Length: 111
Length: 111
Image (cartoon, rainbow over all chains, first blue to last red; front, side, top):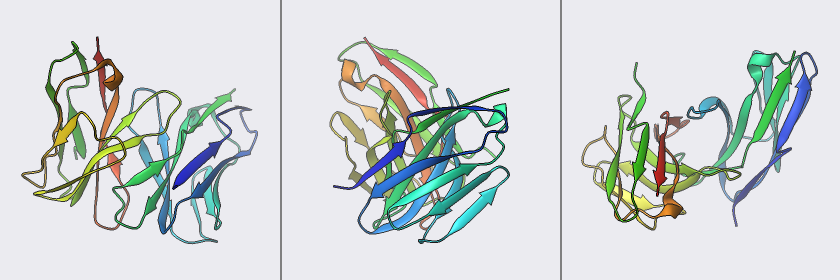
């Protein structure tokens, strides 16, 4: 069964304290691994798409990486405005509109 | 640039009532989808469409109907609302190859 699992469920960091969020997947025929950010009361906001093992993408303090079994979202020197829930999703053969989501990691960054 | 627009933002229904959640996109995307988000769980796919006139079931389709008469619109109908359908509903659109973009959500409570 296709599945996406995120860990930890919640993470509390001090401002400037770097860390990583994990997303492991068992999605057959994976065609893309997506990261989203979701703020309270809002819809998911697209961050990155990774297509193949070894690929990396960066945006400001965030860097996403992909292996054959998992993806990491590295947060370098986070700021309080990085506080949000980060969602990982796998898109499999058949279309990118059929995403399998993990439950998310709630990140809180304190000054 | 509106993106994906969902209406209403909030709705309270009585058990057994029916209603339609509206979703419109202005990006000329072929694919559109409906997800529901419940506490502690990832977003789950309800129904999706790969183009006007074509729809299919996702993971949790029971109790919901969809149709897609135009590229822009993809309404979700609740036939006879049940308390188990209390959730936050997200509509998403994506091009054939690319990332999904989400609306701001409809928070539905069934009493």
